[in-house]
Amino acid sequence: MYNGLRFNSIEHIGVKVRRRYGRLLALYLIHCTLYITSCTDRTGEAAQFFLKGNVQLQKREYKEAIRYYTEAIAKKGNFADAYSNRGLAHYRNGELEAAQADLTKAIEVDAAFEPAYLNRADVFLATGQPTDALRDLQQIAKTYKDSTFYQTRLGEAYAGLNNAGQAQSAFDKAILLDPKNAEALTNRAALAFGQKRYADAQADLKQALAIDPNRAETLNNQALLLAQTGQFAQALPFVERALAQQPTQPYYRNNKGYLLLMLNRDADALPLIEDALRANNKNAWAHRNLGIYYLRRKQAAKALTSFQQAEQLDSSVDQLYAYIGKAHLALGHKPAACAAWQRGQQAGDEQVNDLLRTNCR
Image (cartoon, rainbow, N blue to C red; front, side, top):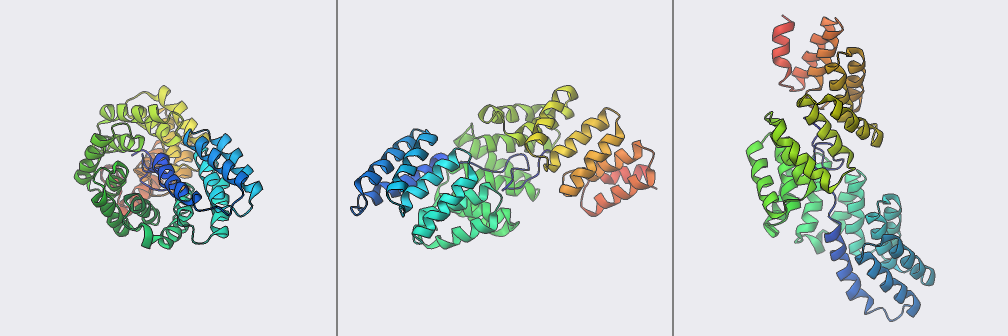
């Protein structure tokens, strides 16, 4: 299909479930409001800067929030709340390395400061570090185990570690705690899709879209499900709606490129795929899609190079071995084509069976 189903890299047409910033912010600022009232030992100036930072954070003025939190830290160097909220502001501003550093500092200052562990787990998930995310989540399990938000994050961490059973349990619990958790429904649908339980995936996506019809990840996954059955024209509007929410999202752009290829709109597809590769040259699905473009343009040598790059990055990319074999066959390398299709058969690629029967008797 387009991009693969990986919870923590958005590489399958939509599961990175990223980013629920609004919910994270609400969760944390409740803590801060309660906490600051009992902190009479802090200098008045540090407290004032901290509160000004909170106001800017709520306004989504992240640079201003960071400035105020930095002033608060300058007045009080062991101000765990300020480090944690500055980390959240960095996170929301796309500065993930700085976010991780500040949240780690907050934990160093106060090892019992549980919201910082939850927020840092979110950063770890956003940067493809599910093992570290799981460690932080387990640290605070006793306090947060009955939180739908926490269980959703826990499911993401387990999914990132390819532990489908634990991921399923966490998403199930998140939805039990809050049946209107569209994010958990979207993630559970992605998990079902990866296990080829398409009816279950569709049921969850339908429910998620009824709750939140504009969630980009859900729209993207709905497109994936439609494309799975060859409904490319019907899938395209869903990806376009996802892009309306996140216009520069490289995985969605790559996914749209794939759909356009399948709809014989190669010239429109190429810039989108190239954009995706500029954003992340290690996106195996984009390399595969570029190979499809070259193969359709009868440039088999270039196609094979792209397919082989995809294979080096992620050999589980959908239909990859079918395309590798087609490129070899177009170059007159029939034995190599048959060998590629045999590898695909061993990997469970159903697309290669007819190719083997037709070409490799």
